[in-house]
Image 1 (tube, rainbow, N blue to C red):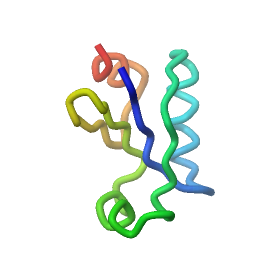
Image 2 (cartoon, helix red, strand yellow; image 1 turned 90 degrees about the vertical axis):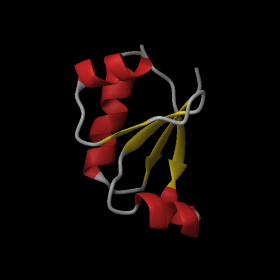
Image 3 (spheres, rainbow, N blue to C red; image 1 turned 180 degrees about the vertical axis):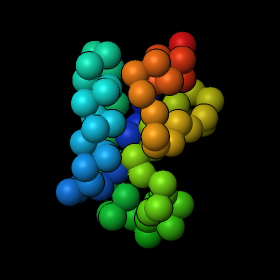
Image 4 (cartoon, rainbow, N blue to C red; image 1 turned 60 degrees about the vertical axis):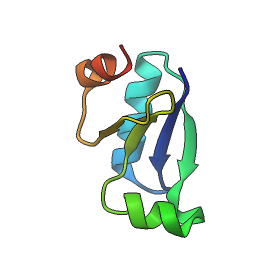
Length: 73
């Protein structure tokens, strides 16, 4: 399953989300929302957001390891 992490530079919450993904050994494509006006509009106040590319579902912050595991199950 392909995962995308929508985030931006200097976002401490995004760093926490990246650490949770790493803790579980999960790889996700990181997309900086600043590079795209549409993404900035959609996610600007909601980052970090993990998105499953297989079904389009999203997990927005705040989440913990348990929520992340349930999301990818």
